[in-house]
Length: 289
Image (cartoon, rainbow, N blue to C red; front, side):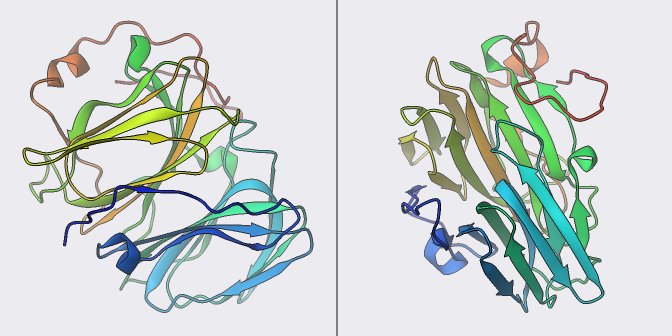
């Protein structure tokens, strides 16, 4: 089934309140696998959960919390915000009951995908996450892998992407809606956007031979990509962050570039010197293509 709606906006939740600013189920999104929510916990608030047929990754966007499940307890964070440090996250396979208590006011991306396989729960620390500078010139961006294809999980693939002011990202335009490995795999994908400044914005395009949509994205917006080529650009003066959540039938991020623009990937100019926007903890910096 192909989703008709592209853009979803967050509800406003006060910093001292508990609740969900987003809760996008597969049914709401019109697809099969991904369930995405953003949850706010006031200091001291507790949240318990159990997903019987979904694996999940809880990505800390702001704050800190304690989490426990059978035989384990961990302190997660702190993270001031997504522009101030690398991610902290927790991976929980299906059928794993857990309890979380906020030590500070928290915002948490609750990323889920339907799952039939059992893997071990795992805490993901900043030093466990990846680092890559991708692209060149004003198409340079920083990739922070949280759950790459090599991660021991069933379907979930997760990364954070930082795009400097005025730059293009997810470029060249690419798609992943056809099962044709190793060139391309079929993936659903969430883009969850954040900006430092309240006036920050960008534009996200999704297009096929029959449909061409461009939407203005601001802080807290979600773009749900089920099919089609898709690039993103952020406005001058506003650094952008987005959380990518993907799931398909294969643990791969293989994608196919729009052939009209694919040549740019093979001849990038030098990378934008403003990157990294967030310095990786204790890692030697390197560039990639």
